[in-house]
Image (cartoon, rainbow, N blue to C red; front, side, top):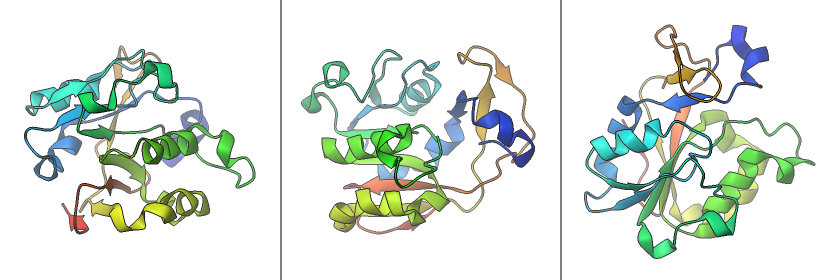
Length: 188
């Protein structure tokens, strides 16, 4: 989401949002009648949920839902799958991984055991921490590989005012990680 010149700022700036075109790439993999839970909208501008609604889906999303808090979660029977972009915070230390927000969010998804598609930095699928979380679920995990870099909308803190970015400003490649939705890996 940040380019190398913004790297020092990116660690403190979490207001990067998924573009509609990013969700349009994978819409063919989500059954039309599925109700979607956009799980990672806490303190966001709900842009992602709105785009998924524009694509024809019923979406459960609230910028007050903390997906790590059981009391905040919608009932599991109220949605069919999770489509989201979890926090991109780096997992810097194997020893401290369980205290990391991204680690906790990915673990939470597997614990919920609902089908999902999420965005992740492609290097994460090779990380030891991700392997630890994914190993028990390998038969259900598939990767959707975009044929070009995905870029994100950058907003001022709080998600109110968009900050213009150069085209293809992202310094890393993103993949979609799918759980219990696909039979094969795909390129889009």
